[in-house]
Amino acid sequence: MELQQTQTQKLSQRQLYSVELLRLGAQELDAYVRELAQENPLIEAEETQPAAPGPGRSELLDRLNWLEDNDRQNWFYQRFSDEELDPLAWVGTGGGLEETLTSFLSRQLDRLKLDGDGQRLVEYLIHCLEDDGYLRAPLEELSQQGDIPLDKLEEALAILRTLEPAGVGAADLSQCLALQLERIGEKGPALAIVRDHLDALAKRHYRAIASALSISQSQVEQALLTIRELDPRPGSVFHVGGQVQYVQPDLIVEEKEGCLTVRSARGERPPFRVSRYYRGLLQSSEDKEVQAYLTEKLRQAENVLWAAEQRESTLLRCAKVIVERQTAFFREGPEALVPLGMAEVAGELELHESTVSRAVREKYLQCSRGLYPLSYFFSRRAGAKGGDGPSGTAVRTLLQRLIREEDKSAPLSDQQLSLRLEREGRGISRRTVAKYREELGIPSASGRKNA
Image 1 (cartoon, rainbow, N blue to C red):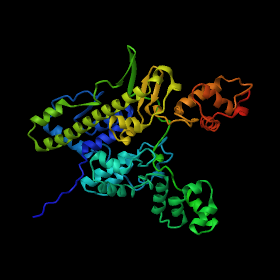
Image 2: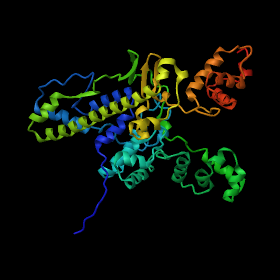
Image 3: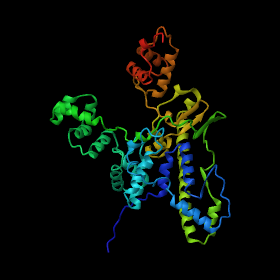
Image 4: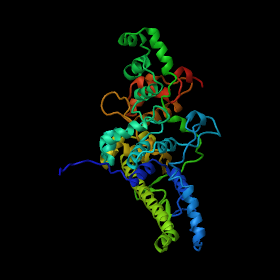
């Protein structure tokens, strides 16, 4: 006999739900619950009335059989036809895409027939993807966060990168383009260029690239044509901007007795309730089929409810740190925003930065100044003339105000704007002023004259 120590992954279905729900905004969470309620009789969405008791055994079995036949396991496992697996087939149809990147990938995954742990790990990575299809969170970080062996995550990532659209799961642009070229069997200069010379290509240093690869400049230009046919954001085909008609806040900030407080817009209400009728039926029924089905659905409902509570707790913790760090904004306005990075919030809460990133994604905060996405409160330090610089967001806001209030017959030059900003305690260089002005779509002084 030999004693061996082995490391196994511990990612549970509960953790998987937690990762998925953390990414959802208030409206997305409500839609998720309504979808789930159609498949799981133990889940009662807020607007749903409790099921009336009294169906006979045969009627109940018919209902459970129908639900089981149509059960899509949280909308992950519905199969696609070959045409549906082509993302281009969805472009421009029906006023836009209703499919999400998450469900598109998960349905493909179901076709691979992986074992339970393997499928769960790939799903975990799918839920960690950003909207553009990139996996920017380091695997080492995700390994620690999920208490999963790194080699198992690497195997799962390799599987994820075989799915459509090509390039999904890449850590950066270079890798994204390389994955797409490998998918089409490209082995020429294009692959070497995207791997090692992408910056030089963007700067049009064709001669330098040709010299480094010992090829002709015309070959570099031909490779460029191939690269331009690739998709730098493989997940963007599933993202439809401008479809949301209104925004529902997740958090509310109020000032009481001179102190800022933050609370959930949902209050103490859970996103759904577990049906008392079906819970009671599980305890009283002697029918094995009914018991097995309801036990499975009860476990699912409890796991999702736990994940929803974790989402609420993490979101509230992040919001409290943001409000504390950005107190000046709530009292003085956008020009008082200070630089804040997600790493700072993560460090204070002892969370991974990727967790904070998912927590603030598509979440909105309502305060006396209006409705703001939580991402608004994260801003890099502006390019300052030495010392600690102001927030880039604050500088842009102040820059807009200075231009709005200027004499239109004698608009301020970038240099004059730089001096005005310095007098306001937001000193940045003339070059940075020009950069921010262009980002805001504001013309130069000559273009603004008498406008």
